[in-house]
Image (cartoon, rainbow, N blue to C red):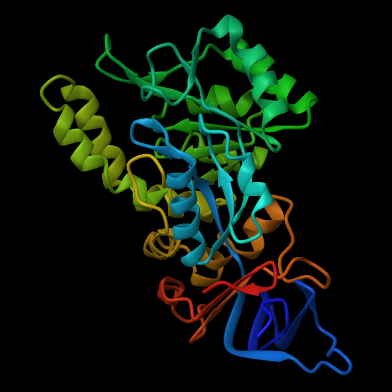
Length: 363
């Protein structure tokens, strides 16, 4: 059968959190809700359909040591695809993965360019490591190279202090974020600690990654400014192991990481309850495997986010936030079909029945 033949998905098509249809057609790789006249070569898939899942914090082309060869990046992308992730916001990578844009069998990527970090204040081989006077210039460079996003490292361990601390002076981030916005890019930042958040939010940042340092004082500020968070709870689960490894040299940092881990679920639920936009991201590609988006959504539910809201964090809401279509008439047919209703139990996301990318059944 031609892999571009007409595809008929029937059962329940979850177009939005409050909208379901009985069927959708895929014609020429595009979504249609009108039955095609005279279609002869039709393949039927039954189940519960969602827009292709979004991993809003993922690193294709990166591993624990830095950039990887293209064949490794391809395997990473295929692992994400086979798990149902069809849209990735690549939250920083030293690799040039533009070749993926020419592949209609791999997930679509929205890039944030390369991380921008303070000198010797991040993982080796990942970031441009610079000083504050150069921040605006590097943000402008990555705004031009990315796909509408720039990624800062907002805090990291300060070896002299022996604990997490903010990386950038207030004036430097204000100027850099203003320049990114002038160039049409949004800015996000890696932040674990408490003391990096207020300056970044008041400087106009658009998103915070991890956001484990949110407190009763900063949550209202995020909500007021509409600053999103991507908690990466499957990554935060590694904090105790990291703390154990740093106990001897950096006991203050280790204790701090354990505290952030211990309150992670309360932090995320408090953010959600305050109206802060929350999106699903795994932080795959550093020390974590790819293909974990279902685990992340399940973690959001464990944190206390309602299942439909957790689904939206990786489907309808995430796509709207990133400016990409879902199952809209005429949109590229990127969808995932499941055996049962994912609204009833998000754990079904871990077992896609079919994955359809650009109208082709790839799984």
